[in-house]
Length: 230
Image 1 (cartoon, rainbow, N blue to C red):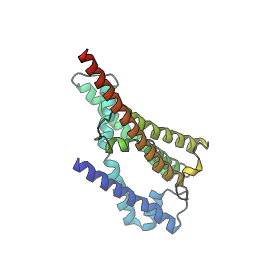
Image 2 (spheres, rainbow, N blue to C red):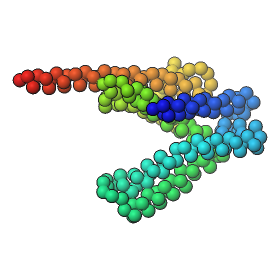
Image 3 (tube, rainbow, N blue to C red):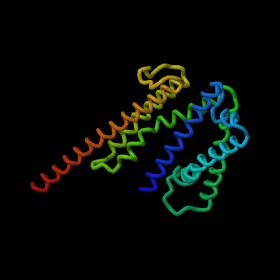
Image 4 (cartoon, helix red, strand yellow):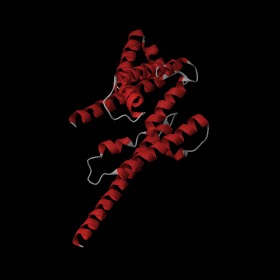
């Protein structure tokens, strides 16, 4: 638990520091159509670009183990519903799946250098992060008494719904989200507002689901007592 908390704090700090790259790009007048991860290191010089790439590779590498293992397990075991001991054929299938996702998964990185496509890729990662913001109260408040399935559903689905609306609005050119949700000004005012208000909504949903689960458990307990008395 201590390691998880420390890792979460350090991760949040690094994300905040990474956000300063965008502030620096705004201060030095980097054009809006140039991706910040490409433009800022170029402005700072070669050695900073190498350091920035090392940081990005390290952060990406921290998720590769779970990505590869999940891909291999899904391809070799879960897809066929295997519950017996693994075989060498399944191991080879899992390894080929890992190799395939390593190649295919890196192809979108090349689009960062294509005008108009790179920002869309970055927007997709922003939207995916917004869609799973409901996991925050699930992880942080799981210790509360009475937590149950409704706690998960009421926290997760509102965030996913907001993420879907944001995706449709971004890539479909359809206005679905009201402007009063924006916080601040600039191109990311809506993203900030959606994450702040959305996180509050997901946390409220988690709390409501927990209360309903507690009442449900209480009702079931009373029913069991009445049945035993009878």
